[in-house]
Amino acid sequence: MSPGPEEQHEIESALREERELVLSLGGYALELAGGVLVANERIPVPRFNFVQYVRLHRNRQSTFLERALDHYFQRALRPSIRVEHPVPDFLDGSLRRLGFRATPEPLSLLLRRRPARRRPAGATYDVRTATADELPLLASFWTGTTEREEFLRALAVALEHPNPEEGLVPGIALRDGSPASAALLHTYRSCVGIHGVVTQRSERGQGAATALVAGLLNDSHAREKAGPIAMWSDSPRLDRRLGDLGFEAVVRYSVYELPADAELALPSASPPAPPQWRPPRRRAETAA
Image 1: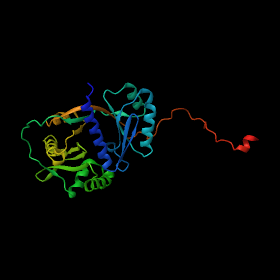
Image 2: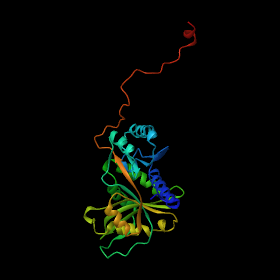
Image 3: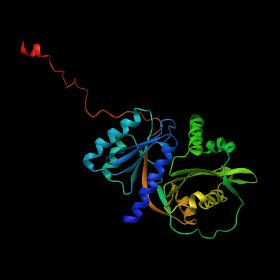
Image 4: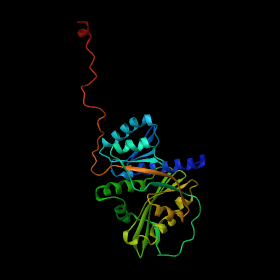
């Protein structure tokens, strides 16, 4: 069933908030007919380089894909491409011919629809805003060693100098003083997004992420906003856990990614041929 006007407005707000998070960390967005290119050249990972909200007519897909991929490939970036379910057969075929493959699980956008359900008592976690000294540790949850320094620089700027209408809170859950889970709470205008929820391997399945999200939902930055509260999930198990906190999946996307060994170049559309354009002759030569 297609979303109604109010729900569609909430989805658009959540998509815009996610773009603004990438922008706040030094990225940019380029809107084309058929989708939005989100890029961060300084943090070259798919999480910050993706094509959002792809909707294309069959006869316009070649132009869009050529322009979009040329933009990323010229910058040596490997984007992911998100296509709303159900994916048209013609678009799935085109992306596969270009070397892209769909991830095993779809990416779900979840919006909070109701209060959290009561949950049985589990491990006790202390949830709070991370300090400046803890940011390098949190960055290790989200980035590899290659991107970590640039990510930390961008994170520090966004935290210390937020633009009007936006806010960023690095959240952390600790047990016995040791970090167990981390996430970023980002706000843009009236919308709230909780991103990058990561749990230490030794703490998984014990409620650390649930405690962290619940704590962030009670943060003043989230409570003062009147718009939607959004999260992203790439796991049915996570969907169920977030359902206990009042979240509900409203739209799902197939995510297409390039294999690590794929060449960042578009295949030739036709056999090599001599140039079809010739420079105009000078007037004197024409007269002769």
